Length: 119
Picture: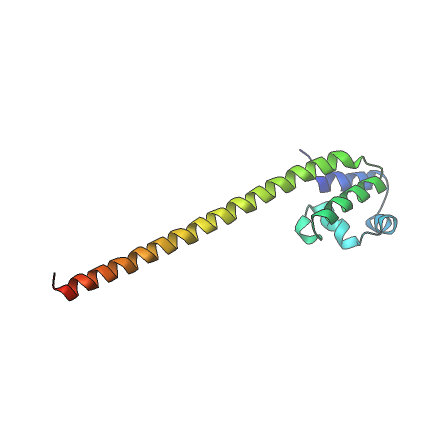
């Protein structure tokens, strides 16, 4: 599957537009347009802006934005699921660490009590 950024760049080049032309037409800053073309969505403002930038950029250079937006939705969903899985794994690891620490404290208390009782 061809990347969103590559589609945008190729469409811009086919249309004979420079990034400066697209910036002037769309009012989207050049650095954001370049980030879109490189697929660096983390360099862009939030999710709603990212979708709007893709839609506006594609429309400005004569591309149908819908296939690109569908591709972006899929990519965004995959990234969110990956982040959620990583967060869940980190939370599980933290909980496991707490259980181990609690078990160690209980064993130390038990051993101390047994020693104190002389058993």
